[in-house]
Image (cartoon, rainbow, N blue to C red):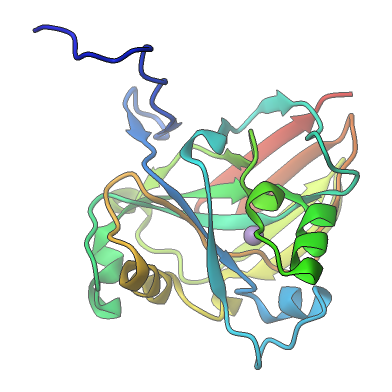
Length: 232
Ligand code: MN
């Protein structure tokens, strides 16, 4: 077959491992939910009753394999950890009814929504976009996926994160304001979802800063664990 006419070689396809398999899931887009746990909304100075969860994105090539050591992000002095349940879609569509949404999920992973908190707060206060506060290089560390065929749909269970062995975040998946099915239904009203889309479903309370040399470990019951080193 003749090579297509690209001026430059196409970029590599970002992908996530599948636990115990030698195949991977190609990542198409990364969607994220903001303020999806009431306790986290409160720690961010928000009233969870008055401000419902909302959505933002990261670039697909922000994924980083669990176990990696990454540099401290540029352009921030307040890099924060956010442990999150991630759903990976195996099929998609537009206007997906909530009662059908779980059927579109291929598997789940534990992810960390790394955040330049200082840039995020400045953007919020100035009414400017969040993009560079959330969607920067290596801002989406993620564990290997566990397929739904093995673990089903984790509607409850402990979600926690520690830094250098000290517990920082703890919550339960059942505390999510919008459940995974509602999140998929809602995002699919804005954009057509497709296989390989990842959805970071929001973080429980206890977010905080990391520094060079730190070791981060996140764990979600039944889903897996994600670890990350910040280079010294
Ligand atoms: Mn988040």
